[in-house]
Image (cartoon, rainbow over all chains, first blue to last red; front, top):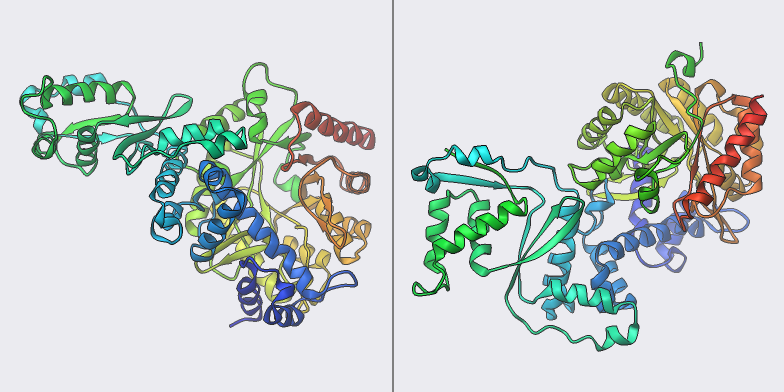
Length: 279
Length: 280
């Protein structure tokens, strides 16, 4: 290994931790061997400036991306979560935009945060907004392309959604709670008194519309159909699968077929559908 | 002919960084007076959405130069080819007169520290960076400029002064130099160096751009925070740089505690007036 590689490996070995290097004898010895120090700062103190900036920089990014989660946990508990996350998921991407990509899964899988599933739901909603924000642009559905499809071919149609469309199945109405937290956060007393939502299976779609991001509620069957279609299933097959598992009673006033028609109108109006193709 | 002449590097005047609190002021309504804008490359190396819409609108109004923070050109790890491809896409969108990033390192396998860590000033580091710059210029097909970074540590392994290290790299790599006057000041304060001598040692014909910024005095060291106005000592370095180098594009960086557009514009105007006096 070259001298430069040895230096870089050694520096990175101590740069990402939450503890001041001055308090770590091994880090002090390492710094002494690598860094000169000066009259005001020991070698470890010099190296510790960059370590401290590493922590602060990444905490700031996680705070920005998971603002409601921080407001619910409080600053100190969020910092513990963020530091634990950084230790287990050190930044790998060149862009800080990707830093929090694994946080929802980390919260869902790691004690003590996993014992409160509402936290993972909140994190998932907040990350869906990040993903929707700069997802690739896509052309919107052209009416002519669906008019060209004859009625018999529709069951074979495959539907592509715009990349910004994020679909979430949640255990709580986390988006409603997120909005309530955001409003309540202006007053610590109001925030502390904010009731937590009871567990209730909830389906939402986060997407980018002209000029802003949106989040809308979905019926369970609509969510299931979106998932089938997003996986590439042809329309007819997707509808059959979802109808089979649907909670909609065959004798319900609105039939499953009528619902599908209404959903398609809504999805088209909201700009979720990019292309419809019969293959 | 010098580097600027060979590459027809324009003097863009005085610009500022394109930052979110000012998007509406800059993009909506009449275009405010500003010579040019610098954007953080990585913020716009995305697939779509509002960032690229805003960038396109900015480009319609002003010259725009991308300035990277994540190339980590001095890391011993191979350059990130995906990063280079995405940077090239951004360059193609903007058609900038040059592209810049920092003379630093910050990557390892499975880790990107998002910091501008100083390199040890050694012949080995010179060789590595020179080869990398050539590769970057080949991919981008644009003039590429390296910026001197602020540093908080000095390596025992260093065998030459920073100014010699930087000068040798830009000469041998045949690239441009983004001279950050605030970084010169910060490093000089932190390491007891002569900031004037640093400015005087820079290869003047390779300087394509100057940076000005604020910093924070932490007592035992000075931190490059880009917070607050440019201090008098940094203005003095800027004056020295312009007198030596001549008129080159200048940029005010203000990234923390970002002020109103009016305050930022006033800081840019101060540089503009000073530049005009010195050049005339």
